[in-house]
Image (cartoon, rainbow, N blue to C red; front, side, top):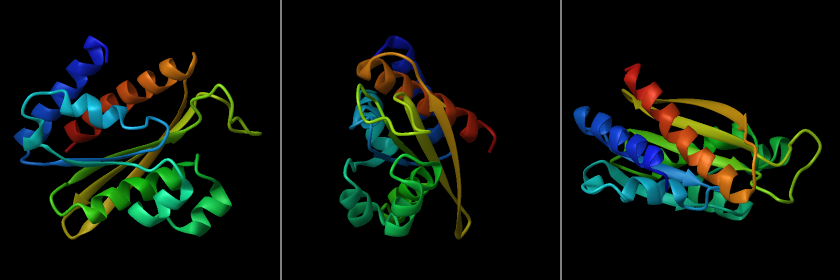
Length: 167
């Protein structure tokens, strides 16, 4: 991980600790790199609960509760799936208040019409009282597989910081 990404992970940890929150993550195209970035930070066990790598559709359904209809109608790489992944990570975590998910096409293959290589959808979920709020964002990153995945982790951390700072 780059120094900038590690700084984002450390800052996210500080912000979560300040709120007495924990986070979870659900990853597809990033393959555990987000969880690796946050667990590289000493003391992350105080603010990181768990991570899921759900690369297959079956794993998304079985581990996170993503609806088969969502996958059928929108595809694995969609904001709808990303939001359900983030919500699912929170639903199975009894400690986390915030979750991040990523699902995309890191390349070099896998592109489909309307979904180019480098397209990554992110989901963010937060417990609010007895409910849950979710939101999603999609970005298209340039570069090879490694660059797309690294940029995805940095974007997820940066966006999470912005969302948490709004609270």
